[in-house]
Length: 455
Image (cartoon, rainbow, N blue to C red; front, side):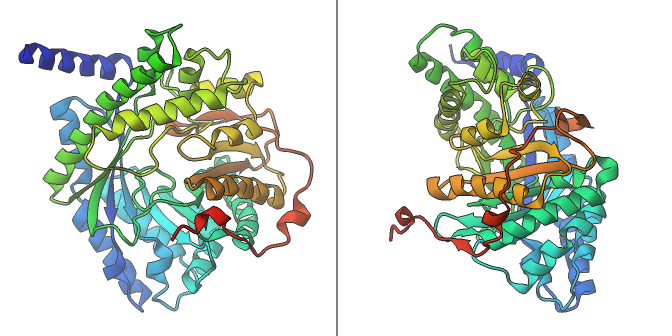
């Protein structure tokens, strides 16, 4: 009987990989750069490059070995480093673009897809390094290819830094302008967080937090196609049955992630970090979060009931996945990146989903407003206000939220933009035409909510 069960499990996994797009979305190596800080910027950058090459030199080859041996696709191999604002602050340099170039070149040398950590944590205010990094951000993203940036603007305990949220509206617009020749793709590599986590393996928001080990492997799973296939078999059944079905499949998907995490960390001789339980869609047909929600009984993603369906999905994935791995972490839930999800793209086209509805959905899902394309002439303050709304959801609900929004230079609502690869394609979405200017110009901080004081 045991052999038969094992055989059935193996055959089921093969089917999930071949027919239902099961993959590991990323193995991400977190690297601490604190020992690379140096008053001399040239020396600091040399230390950073050497450390990345030393620790991550075999990351890609090990990932490919695991793919070959176990037959499990690993879509991305990535690196996340300590926020550069903390490391570069030791120098007296007034521009950190060269630090971004160092990360870019080192990432290309080891062959990874992306490197995250051109980041700053500014939820209560700016230090010197934070200010310089944010000021240099547009030029840094225009000068690099695989560097990703994240800025944490709020926490439940600290409230929201509205001054920096105001500034980031302009920063994002300037990044869009400097990368206009590539449909403002630089903005696809900026994530603005509230309650950012230290062990997130997903881009563009990954960085290695100050409480993380010297080096660790964090894994992000995938599997929307597997979940959708499973719930097709329980059409018309109760929500209780639906939730149980999702939990069981999430358990199986996460076991695959746990296997990859264990193998990668052992072969690289580094710490095994977390498995992120997030369902991450791709532009491929059948690999969509929106299609899962529609399979639950919604005519089109975004209609009434969508938030409830997403809440059930997110909770069930977490419950199933938690029992299947040693340490869950990262963002864990369900991603709803518009351009990266073929079902979301269709929902935008047919008018069933809007930015307002997406914002409501983020109150129950894994992260936030992700890969949303808006007109290139959107005012800076409107972008800041969108960030503020999403940040408030995270602050009040004690959850991680984020915004990755792209004001595509020269495009208007209804235009189509295609990036290719995992970034996909999407229609430019309209924003509210009424102004938020005077609200955003207040600056300062929105205080933490009263329920944050729990000590």
